[in-house]
Image 1 (spheres, rainbow, N blue to C red):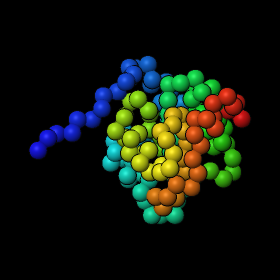
Image 2 (tube, rainbow, N blue to C red; image 1 turned 90 degrees about the horizontal axis):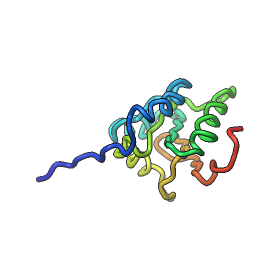
Image 3 (cartoon, one colour; image 1 turned 180 degrees about the vertical axis):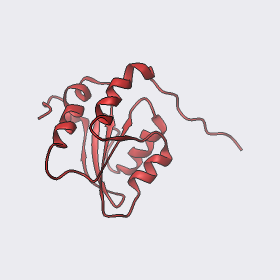
Image 4 (tube, one colour; image 1 turned 90 degrees about the vertical axis):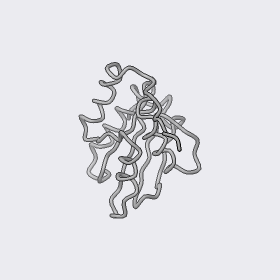
Length: 133
């Protein structure tokens, strides 16, 4: 028998806190463990679940976080909002990626789920080089 040790964060917590706070301020809940991810995504309640994999990169700062914040200003928005931070809660983000079948790992990225099934996935290549709008 052996113990599975979670992967340690890659970045200083204080340095990334403002990047986390941008999404928390607009209603996102952080997914910190694989169990949190399962409870958020693998739910059969006919609710839409938006999950953003946050990142320290420039396209997350310039396009992804501002873009998702702008998107939430519409009349129709997802029922639940969650985020996992790539390079921080690495086990949680690995679990998010298990739900995103058929795509290589990508951060930042945005996934829309319903009843545990992936409906739409916006990869980094769909974000990078675009404005928030």
